[in-house]
Image 1 (spheres, one colour):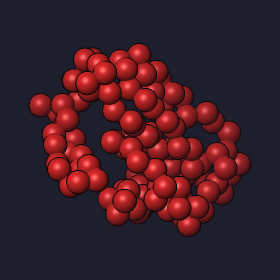
Image 2: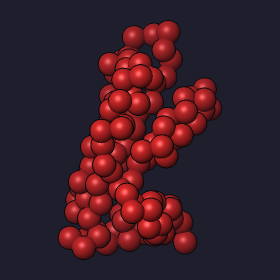
Image 3: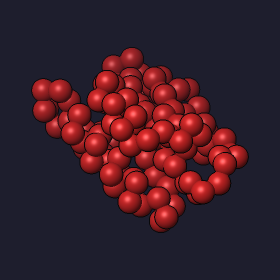
Image 4: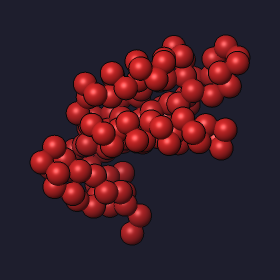
Length: 116
């Protein structure tokens, strides 16, 4: 079973089966999900829409979930701005990924998400 551990504000940890999340969305299983688009090629002007995240969000929404995309790359948000934004959110699940060149940022962002 492919799944992810999530912790609620009460620190009750639960295992969410991805098959249930993607295919069996219902009002009782509806999650608040944030998909993060981390910065890439910071030396160049952003020129791509995060199509992969848009496709994933469409499937999740079609299955009853509330999905937001947090685009860090487009506006080139600073780490302080990202930390402040994450601190003010209350999602059940975050999705973040990228290329090997984004590894340090993804690791940092994941640690910030765990703090809140």
